[in-house]
Image (tube, rainbow, N blue to C red; front, side, top):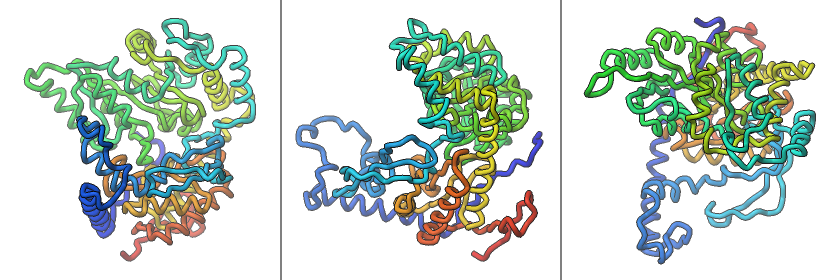
Amino acid sequence: MYKRPFIEAFEETPMLVAVLTYVGYGVLTLFGYLRDFLRYWKIEKCHHVTDREEQLDFVPLYQDFENFYTRNLYMRIRDNWNRPICSIPGPKIDLMERVSHDYNWTFKYTGKVIKDVINLGSYNYLGYAQNTGPIIEAAAQVILQYGTGVCSTRQEMGNLDKHEELERLVARFLGVESAMTYGMGFATNSMNIPALVSKGCLILSDELNHASLVLGARLSGATIRIFKHNNMQSLEKLLKDAIVYGQPRTHRPWKKILIVVEGVYSMEGSIVRLPEVIALKKKYKSYLYLDEAHSIGALGPSGRGVVDYFGLKPDDVDVMMGTFTKSFGGCGGYIGGKKELIDYLRVHSHSAVYAAPLSPPVVQQVITAMKFIMGEDGTTIGKQRIQQLSENIKYFRRSLKEMGFIIYGNEDSPIVPLMLYMPAKIGAFGRELLKKNIAVVVVGFPATPIIESRARMCLSAVHTKEMLDIALKEVNEVGDLLQIKYSRHRLVPLLDRPFDETTYEETED
């Protein structure tokens, strides 16, 4: 089914690291309960974590453990998130400096700006989030004609000719009959899945699907069953059981069976095994919903996503969803497919009927960027950026593996998760790299499994080799400092092996 090698790595967590990670969370939890006890008896005075007197008679707004986790674990490393930037999310960014004098409960801004921080955190895959050049000039020109917003829904007075132009372009770009755009990527999933399935239908969802897909599935009222990530045996078993046994209790046939997957999984850097999913979909006469938020523009020889990456036909995917927030430097999302599907969604999708559409300058931003990718601007800039992104991905991933880090995901994925595991090292990794002018996103529980905390780095076509070399040098130094080179498999350096051969050397534990 695959015309090229499909290589993904998910190296198992070393036993000692897993044990120490659990011990670390256990110690933090014990000290959290101790501190809560001291706060209760007014021994430890921290006004930020106690309810005001006038609030004591109210029912708690949040669950107790959620509050406990926020107070005693998240607050220790809260300084790694919500950092305000004051520049475009390009290859380098400027950060506002801030300090905390109460252990991250509040922050004060010093008035200083940290300049030229190498940005390894934004989804600016093709570098089109920029403030100079023909794309931004076209968007600025549209503001003069249309303004910045339409102040209505598409079905009332908010349907512009620009929206129609973008939808025709998206359909042509994807190779489908028709397409529809939405003002918000998250709502594209959460509001359209309920329009497609309902009670009496079955959703088969990958266990690592995005929160927007999970919310949409829950809002639909359909029965949801989870299959193991990218595990075709698990998916096929659920499909067989669904057809053999039907609905619970009544055993009537399901009205619809919808398989929901992503193109690139944003926390694992994994690419869906789409040829096998499509084969199962056809075999068991079900439907396929594909979320290409992180793959459109970033995968495939022509940037048309995971369908293009595997050389498949767009007709084989029933619902093609994607966003403009990553590779196109805009916002919002789209759904593409057969004309009957799109006509149905125009009437029944809450995101289409009740929500505001895309802003005119954002529409123009996406149109111009998409034409660049398609080569319709008369240049090869778009194709060059797709190739440069692919080269950056391979170089960066290979270099990190050679250093001894555990790196998750597919070798062609623009998302590079570097495993940290221990709770103390989540905050330390982000802080130490920021000192060296490198910005990364660190992620921990509950966004990841409790023993799989990680730093998630995203690559861009506008990262130069010099930038990547600087970032790799600093990551290597911080890795040695924090002792997070956990991999038991070391890649042989590139100069010591043939170019397209992957060799592993076993190292002593």
